[in-house]
Image (cartoon, rainbow, N blue to C red; front, top):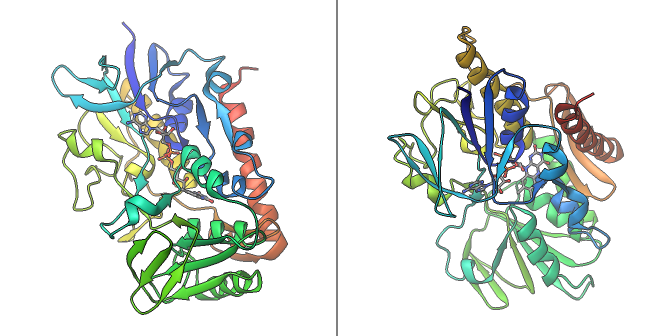
Amino acid sequence: MAVEVVVVGGGYAGLAVIGALQDVPDVRIQLIEPGNAHELIPELPEALSVHGAISRHVVDYAEILDETKVKHVKTAAIGLQHTPPAVLTQDGSKVPYDWLVLASGSSPSMPPIPGLQKYGHPLRNAEDTARIKEALQYHKAQRVAVVGGGLTGVEVAGMLAADHDVILIEAARRVLPALGRGLAEYALQRLLRSGVTVVLGQKVQRIETHSIVLDRDQYGYDVLVWAGGIAVPEWIRHTGLNLDDHGFPITNANGQATDRIFVAGDLWHVTADGKDVPATAQVATIAGHYVGTTIGRLILGKPLEATGFSPRLRGMLISLDPGQGVGWVLHGGIPVRGLSARALKELSFRQYRLKLARTFRRP
Ligand SMILES: Cc1cc2nc3c(=O)[nH]c(=O)nc-3n(C[C@H](O)[C@H](O)[C@H](O)COP(=O)(O)OP(=O)(O)OC[C@H]3O[C@@H](n4cnc5c(N)ncnc54)[C@H](O)[C@@H]3O)c2cc1C
């Protein structure tokens, strides 16, 4: 009888799990995923620019999985049944598994700031992007407030600066904590030169219809984009898995939450040398491949890697506007700025698409 592997979520991690497992003999793979298309989330800030289109940044699952035997179960997971093991889904069915991978990504973190739920637009997926695009008018009289000076907030502010009056608000005293100070300062200067007003060192206290109230100042806005970090999706809290203080499933070094359940991608709280590894598409892809390979070895009775998962980031690149970027490549060895950083980011997008095609296309 075939071994049943169920993957929840067809994002960067879920597809990498499937890619690593698809050639293991006698394995039947089911993907539980409510969407029709794989969303290339790191590309979504580009879709916000005036000539951007969301359709350019998604790839239909029908196209990806066409030549595979993977079954796409088109619904969302809402819980787990532990005996006998099965995933409970929104359409009322139970999907039994021998091995399960939870790779349903993260949700935007929405702290209890008065007015945030009502007026803030999170940006986490194509649907959020479409809502923001609907609100944008692409003229300089419209003010867009972007809250959060991390990777997402900086990219959105930079993308919109040509056509809007943009204000970027960050509680810390610097932007881009994931980059060294010199590169972050370069990004800041670039944003300022593009006309973005950057407010550092003030937290949002409350949000009103057209006004955002900070610790000391208050600013008017027309559209508010919330880029305040990520959280664990609510349904994971009700799975009966052991969770850490932030709500992430507790795993061993292989991403195993229980004997038969793994997590991958943003849901896997990975640390290296005592530090959090940033939740990125790059890490999600490497982690998904690692988890898929690990399950394949367990199925085939092969020994596992002794060291556990330890990602080595190839680089980190951030777009600052349609022609500029900043970051580092070659495992942190080389800082890059300007046109070359932007070109390298484009290249990384293209490489991912090629990798997808190579992984799922038969010769
Ligand atoms: C605006 C933005 C810009 C970013 N830029 C970069 C960047 O430049 N570089 C980078 O490396 N990273 C970037 N990231 C981070 C990166 O997008 C994530 O780390 C990555 O997508 C995580 O991959 P994942 O597979 O865990 O989740 P996702 O890619 O989010 O995939 C999760 C999948 O699970 C599905 N799903 C959700 N809930 C359920 C459910 N209940 N049941 C079944 N399926 C479900 C979703 O539909 C989705 O298809 C960015 C993120 C954002 C929001």
